[in-house]
Length: 216
Image (tube, rainbow, N blue to C red; front, side):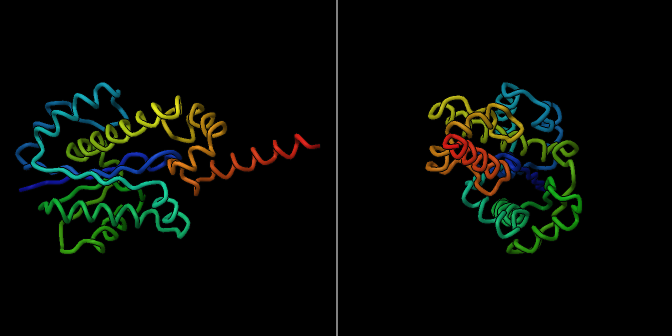
């Protein structure tokens, strides 16, 4: 039986794309993922993720990665379809891999609803099981989380080579906020910032207020 695991990286980020990944393995190979030490990518260092990525890809029978740019995310957020956007692209990965069963890390507490959402976009019927914390509890989903995270890490590192230090790209990162405050116009022009995020609006208001204060 062929088993797929799907997860994302960068859902909450304000800089950079959302990365979706699906990994497919033969059921008999799941034990190998456990043996090499796969776990939720957030619990691993960058060095550990890179090492595991190469080992995972040797074990996997197939995999897919989809990169959703900030402009696509902004459109979905503005029409309140962000979860549907993610479900739609997860369905594309499942349609391409054609597993016997697919486990998906659910962004919704109502994980059954997310399963149905993905199924609604698939071209044919699959056994799709979306679960909260699947990246922590199901090895093949942990593997997908590692591949997605290393891909996004690579992209953020490529940005840093162009723009200088910009942190992780998440609103909780002080370096990211400092970068946006100082280089927002350049980030906007190059399409790497998500304009639909509240953090973006807050920085815009702050910069406008400072310009006004200069003339008072």
